[in-house]
Image 1 (tube, rainbow, N blue to C red):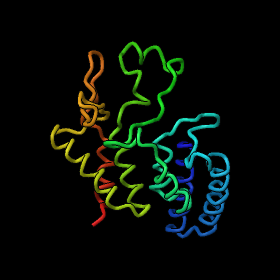
Image 2 (cartoon, rainbow, N blue to C red):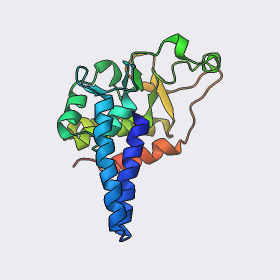
Image 3 (cartoon, rainbow, N blue to C red):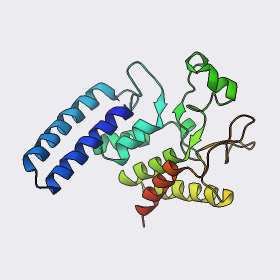
Image 4 (spheres, rainbow, N blue to C red):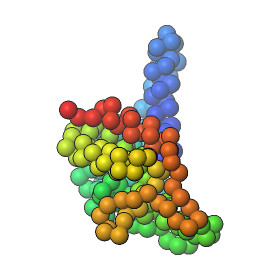
Length: 207
């Protein structure tokens, strides 16, 4: 789903740029493609029974990236955006969203990541850029207190670390997060992708 969302955003951007450059016919073409693609996207990926977008066909996992991006950038109608945020499972959402829920089966994880000790990278770990995306989604859906709480939580973690890491995990208390630091793997810092997403989210903070 996420790949298709990036395609939708690319079509929107192309339409906007073409219009700005005075290429109205080309802009209209991109816009028409975007409308068609958005309709096909919803038909393929929207799961009304679970109130979420599917990760990919046949996959039952709740995934933070595709669902929060769709809400943050208005790729789904407002009623579906609120539906996604109102039914998000608590297991994935605190203190900011983990990547996926439930865990992927062990058979679906590469032997290299198991050897390095990060078999949980794509399900149990907490990516900071997804937290930023979630705060943007809450804001765009009109849930300002939830959006600001996420931003404050992430800001407190960054301030305490005096650094911005790529990925985090639950600490011993099971409630707060710490950056991943294992025998063969340490979370990267500073991490530009997450840094940029935090800046974008903070620029739109609710006041």
